[in-house]
Length: 109
Image 1 (cartoon, rainbow, N blue to C red):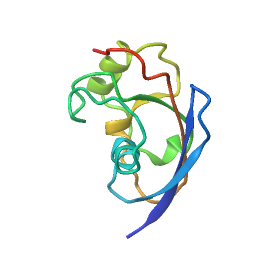
Image 2 (image 1 turned 120 degrees about the vertical axis):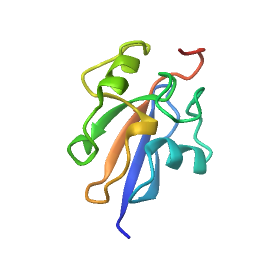
Image 3 (image 1 turned 45 degrees about the vertical axis):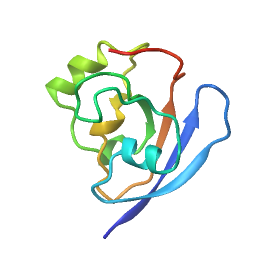
Image 4 (image 1 turned 135 degrees about the vertical axis):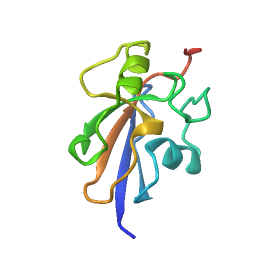
């Protein structure tokens, strides 16, 4: 099973954290498994925008964005060209990933 590292950066200024991720895990899974606060109101099934993150590196190694995910990103706070939903960013095991987690002090869609 392939393993990569996910580095989490935080918009609130918290120190970066790097954690291993195995192929098939999502960015959301890795965050929650390591006590990183990342909202997920829908339970991680691409039904809201609360696990919105910015992919700073490793985007080419993630699954393509679906129309459904794109619709929810449009509802996120401050969407950018590198926006993704953490629940949909499934590790494929080839490239390390760097993620910025936006401020988490809101109630999302």
